Image (cartoon, rainbow, N blue to C red; front, side):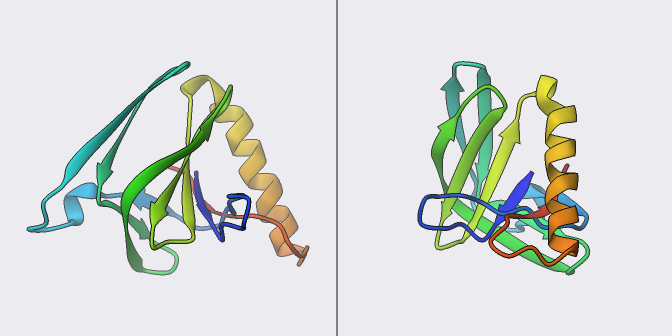
Length: 122
């Protein structure tokens, strides 16, 4: 789940739309893998991580991932010079994350203020 609009307490926001993680689209740029061994499994992110938000037709490279925290549902990462966070969910949490994103999208459609926005899921 891709989160946009990080607040002071690193609360992310989800934004509706199709999203593709596309590290291969960063042509001719050197990439580096960052690996975290967490209690529920391993997370590997490419730096830079390139997000293509299809609905907005924009490529958003995210650099220097930092682990904000992890728990039973997944791990959340922030990136240098960006107000976007990425939530990497454990496979067993997929249904819960889908519901979370749908709920946030519903709140956004109803103009609820101060709510995270779901960019999409991959």
